[in-house]
Image 1 (tube, one colour):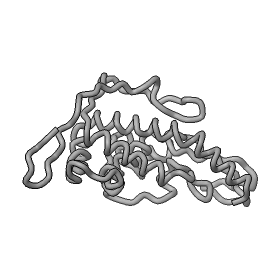
Image 2 (cartoon, rainbow, N blue to C red):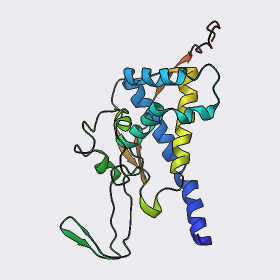
Image 3 (cartoon, rainbow, N blue to C red):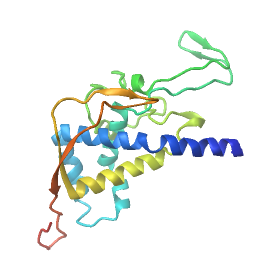
Image 4 (cartoon, helix red, strand yellow):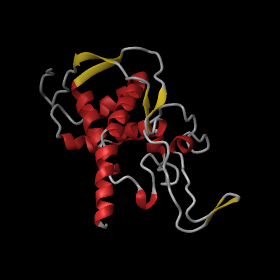
Length: 213
């Protein structure tokens, strides 16, 4: 990369790498606590690691990762992925000329019934049932301008969620659905997602040892 490109990437990490991940964590916690069976499956996977796992072990959990991916699918924090083609190309019945600004929408794509059956349902298992192509799943954009921090964001989400859910209990403060609204250039919940802290979870014991808190 040139120095200008490096500076642009660092600026992107600074301004796009905090709120987007925080909002995605909030949505994933929200959906997990609206779907008790899904939360139970995540907790069973986490508990199988034992009482004191290394935080990096959370990154290897497939269902926890699927929950993070599903949170990003159903509520992508960025819904406008701007691109400018360098050369003309055909799209359906249209010819897109070079230099024409286009804007693929993760929100519209992620809610296509033919790709994601029951698109409004939070169903992490869809990411275990099949692998979606880079043209079907684009919460981080795509191509050469795909978000530089994509892998880091997913790893961060898994470690934060794994740590929170392993040791603590929460519940939603209200059953009222939370609105998904524009917040400046990103999308997120209207206001916040209030949750009530329910105390520490019992730590699953190692083999042959008594259960402790």
